[in-house]
Image 1: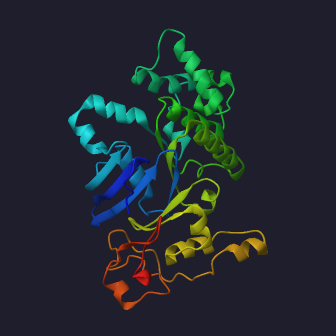
Image 2: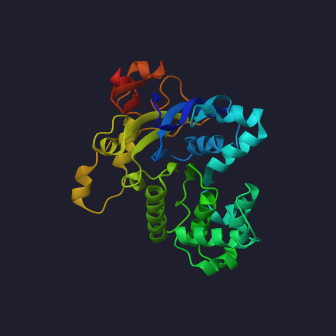
Image 3: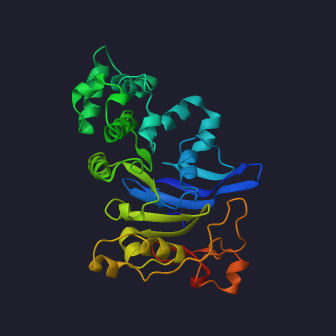
Length: 327
């Protein structure tokens, strides 16, 4: 499932992240593998509790993987670099940045916008001379279409959408090559979401950024990502180019997600896959069903689905599905 060429900037290999709780072991991420190309906007989709944000936090080093590898750029294992050499770890931290879901909690309310944007520049020694900090802050504000005088404001003095634009500017401060976008629009009004998405599209195209966009909103990704991975209960169940996933979803879970997208016209309704009914409840992450983890909700389950976990199959070049229906 992992591509082996020079066009890959990051490969996730059999990544696992388990948490011990009083209720039992939570397999938040359980054997996830996928790759992201240079200059690509890659989407990771899943319901709440699917493990998608855990993947994000493991990539940036907030969590240490239970097992697996995160290979960045020239097949450097991020975890191995961090443990062996502090200076090389700092290089990785400079190259990989994140935009969190809620800017109200990710921006220090006691720091001005100027101080917030200067901090990563100072941390990585990117300010040259007394006036260079102001010049670079002005450049960052211009990149996200914010007025220059905002540098003297504080997060509490501006709106939620503007705070998220500041978060994006902060992520761009170190001139990274890879950005993790962890549901960057879910805490914002719909009208503000469009502005943030348009800004991200413009920046990604202009700067040739490689990004992973994590969200629960499948409809949001249609005009944003080039490929999508669908995640359910800690596992990837389908990976597909964007157009093919919307026109011909393979996994029953993907079909369920697409059929539940709200539409406003009969024409849009006709474009959706035939609605499938999901039975049962989402299983507890400490009591995941044996075999295929989706079998308890799948209308087309077979006997083997309750016993054997399906393998990830490449049914077509670039299209992967983890389902016994395709064995």
